[in-house]
Image (cartoon, rainbow, N blue to C red; front, side, top):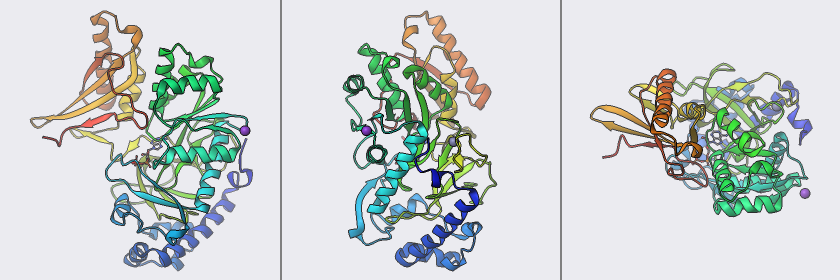
Length: 434
Ligand code: ADP
Ligand code: K
Ligand code: ZN
């Protein structure tokens, strides 16, 4: 089931022709209307007329989060302020918030892309969509909301928080689709158990999880706990919000990027060179249709790779693989690069460990130390200390073996790690604090 069959199954040649036309138009728009871009183009010695093929993309300057900050709040907007119908701001996971603006057309396109996303995930107009993404400046809530309405489904705008009530409303209203961060999915499941609801007995059948990195092991866990198909959705406020890409339920193997609206590249994050298809690096996206705040070669800081092989579902749009982390998130521990998601995979594969964890990095003398705190599975809580120590040792040993870093793994009591309503904070890097 495909929401926009024509656009989502375009032969690549036709797709690329559309992309080129839109890229040329984009360059003209930003050159004429955004002083920052005109300066950057001039500095790079390029004019809109130099973009004759898609490969000319690499002549264009990158845009970084810092550029949005330097032009805070509205300096990168490409239309008169009265044409902006909505503002959002990024959640500021890594510093000061950045502001984005949408024209009516941007908002309409976003709704369509989210409607496409729902259908890719296996939802349709008969679904009841329980939307636990936060409503407000964060793009998650409203992005999902308007997409669900465009699809013609029934949206339940519950937002984050009040977890036990959420669970009973899911039961009362018979939600069939849940949208949340994967970590909040776990929190919902936990609350359900506490009030005596087995989520597998609910009509729920699809979970659309995103907004933070997660792993295939976490997918299996959520699918098992809720009796659903769980798919990965990706987006960022600078580019649009949720619905930049999503996995199809048919393959569950990488997220289709809606390429008629977004032009992706993978670059080496250090040299900025474009990498060949299939290689892993930083995802860079150019917005092809956005009017309010179009972005040229925006460096997402997210690490992934692109898969151009045809997909079983019939969509021709390229797939991006699961994000292994943000380049900002990568921990360098005594010279070894580690992504929190790698540690997550190991924890989730260990029997007796729950998926609730946090990683605390400190510097003692000149040495980095890592403590991984993992909640014990409730069923094991009363077990002999000896068994618990065995679990700690197993995780510790596996991390050392697979990631090459020594850590101290500590099992902690069930529910002792703080639960989040949105994006979970897993890493506490205290190395640069007194
Ligand atoms: P902030 O940068 O303040 O967190 P956003 O709310 O716009 O602002 O978050 C976008 C970021 O969230 C992405 O750049 C990415 O790092 C992360 N993200 C979103 N969806 C996913 C996903 N499915 N998997 C991994 N990370 C994701
Ligand atoms: K409906
Ligand atoms: Zn597919």
